[in-house]
Image (cartoon, rainbow, N blue to C red; front, top):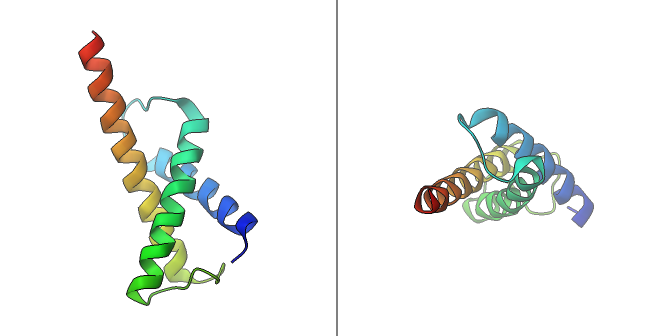
Length: 90
């Protein structure tokens, strides 16, 4: 899958992750899209290791599922980090 395809998949995963995760999320939509991009690449890589999808297949169902799960995990980690640092400052 090309670089542009991974960016598109990451942006979609970031939006889905933002909609799934409850509560206030630091950084706004731009951060959600960036964490989705990172999570999509991470999830796609894990999917290719497990044998569910391949890094070069954009329309692979397994790649999409793992990319979205990766986006949610990275967004959750970012939310936990920003929540912890904002609690220390208060």
